[in-house]
Length: 415
Image (tube, rainbow, N blue to C red; front, side, top):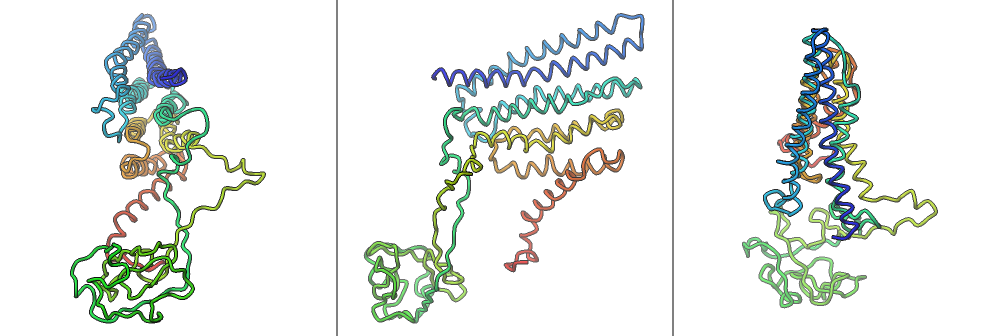
C-alpha cells in the first residue's frame, strides 16, 4: 500500500468514525439538556438536574467507546482483511449495517424520547430544528458516499469502460429490404424432433438432416447467390452457395428452432416476424466542439449526486417531524420509526436487485400512508409532490411487475 493509498484509507476511516460518533454525542447532549431543564422546573431548589445532565453525557461517552472497541473496530479489521464471513458474497455492506444499528437507531431513539419527555411534562423546550436532517442524515449520506468511493482511485481520470460496464448498450436497427425464403417439402420439425443450432464446415455447402435435399428457395437464382451481396459465407440449410455479407467463407449461420406457427426455422440476426436483418452499429464519435466541456462526466462525481438523491425522500420525511405541531403531538414516533426502516436499505450494495422491491416495501408504501395521514391531520406539512412520488412509484411497481402478467394485460398491442 503506497503513501497515497494509506492517506486515502486514513481519511475514509476518520470520516466514517466521525460520522459514527458525532451524531450520538450531540443528540444525547441535547437530550440531557432537555431532561435537566425539565427537572429544574419540577424541582427548582434541587440539584438533580445537573446530576442527570452529566450522567447522560457520561453514558454517551461510555456507549460510543464500548461500541467502538467491541463492534466497530473488530468489524473494520475483518472487512480490511477480507474475511469471507463479511465480504464473501459482496451483496451487502457490514459497515453500513453497523452504522445504522449502532448510531442512527440510538440517535432516533433519543429524539423520540425528547419528544415524549416534553409532551408528558407539558413543556416545549426544543424540537431539535434541523439537527436530525443536517447531522444524523448527513452522516448517513457520508457513510454511503465513503463506502461507494473508497475503492475508486481519487486521482486521474476514471476508467470509462469500467464505468459503462453495467449500462445497457443501445442498438441501432437499420431497415433493409427483406429476403423472404420459403422451403418446400416436409417441415424440419416433422423430420427431426431435435432443436438447437447446427454449425460446422461440413454442413456449410451441402444438405443437412433438418432440410430435405430437394428443398428450393423461392426468388433466388439457380446457384442460390443473392444479387448485390458480396460472397462472404454460406448459409447453413439453404441449397447452393447462398451468401451473406460480412461472413467468412464456409462459416455456417446457426439455425434457431421453429416457433410452431408455420415458421420451421429462422436465421440468427434476422427478425423472425418481419424477416428484416438486424444490424448493430457503434456509437457516433464523441463531440469535440468548443462546448465539449458541457459533456464532461465522471462516475466518481456522480456518486455524490446519486447518494443525495437516493436519500432525498427520507430527508423530507425526517424534516416533517421538526414541525412544532407534529413534534409535540406524538407523531414524531411513527415518523422517525418509518424513516429508520427506510434507512435499512443502506445495507445493500448500490446496484443490488433487491433495492427496487425494498424501496417500495420499506419506503414508498409506508411513506404514502404516513404522509396522507399527516396532511389530513396537520395540513400541508409535507409537499404533495412527495405524496405523488410515493403513489406513482408503488402503482408503477405493482403494474409492471405483477399486473402485466395477467391475461388481460398480456397483449402485444401498443396503446
